[in-house]
Image (tube, rainbow, N blue to C red; front, side, top):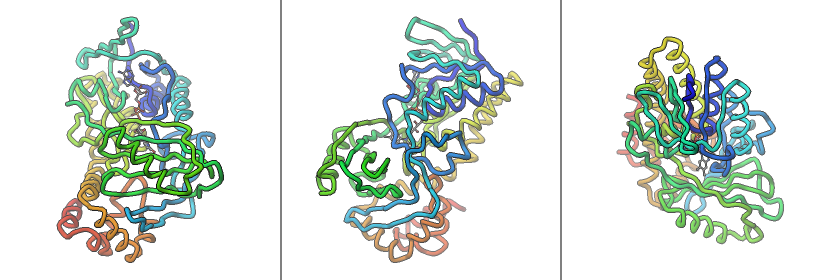
Length: 391
Ligand SMILES: Cc1cc2nc3c(=O)[nH]c(=O)nc-3n(C[C@H](O)[C@H](O)[C@H](O)COP(=O)(O)OP(=O)(O)OC[C@H]3O[C@@H](n4cnc5c(N)ncnc54)[C@H](O)[C@@H]3O)c2cc1C
């Protein structure tokens, strides 16, 4: 049985980033990855807020497009345009980026074993078993970075819940997209999910959605959307993708015995958008700092500092986002249309452009409460519920 300081289950972007940090500290690390090829198939829209550059290495070669703002569409197509002078987000080549992050982990000294699906583990003894070849690994610490259906999480949490997301890569057959802006469409059928158009170039875009529906339902919505708009008449679907987004679970335990969870496996996703990379990368650093301390002092009880630190850093932002999500879920198409009209009238485009942030909604909501705009767009009861989050 091979012995390691850390066995990481899953070489997704978050697991690879964690492994890089911990290998850089000089610890013996192996990543066990069930896929034959890292990052394939693509299961991401690849939109990352500009803060990514503070949270992880992102070489320019993986940035396909810069995004300056968004068009937000109501069900009857009332539109809010928000944005800034400088790029707010990047559209990335996610497959290339996943491979790059794995390479960085290897360059830092981590070992990656592909085609190694973990099918059994003991979170008390640190024994990890892989189905192919009946191999066994001994870990001082196990890190579950194995995504939405984490086998590691199931050792000390109930089965995780998730929603499906579907996406097409569209070629429009000509230059039609404004590459500076994404389009986001809200309606009650999809809420709290939404439909997105993310331009990769003037002629190509990722168009996708997530909602509480099955895969056929999502495809139906996407096809109807494409067929309903004349500008898509020459469009061809180059690729179809789908994937699962974990539902954020505030009760999930992230640490037990000598084991921790990270990334989608820990449901570290923004409830409003389903985005998991930014929060996952930040947590990878927090986890690596704690795991390093635990290994240094040979004390597993220290691992709980990671869970406590994560909650301190993210709990209130995620709570706000959960409330926003619940509100959206309760609104009809009419409510949404009214809300967009009131927002437009209340000069919300300027407010959102100034205080809006892809990853943090609490700052914008605080500003909307301060100037009374929130009070005017959602029923009084809901406003009080959001307001009380700050008490
Ligand atoms: C359609 C779609 C669009 C999205 N768009 C965005 C976006 O624009 N921006 C954003 O920030 N986020 C987005 N996300 C979410 C984002 O993709 C995830 O949050 C991110 O991939 C999480 O990274 P991770 O490393 O935690 O998990 P994953 O990327 O899921 O990686 C987990 C790895 O573990 C491996 N694994 C699983 N089980 C085992 C096992 N038993 N043994 C060994 N290996 C195992 C898997 O093969 C995988 O490689 C999107 C998700 C979907 C589905």
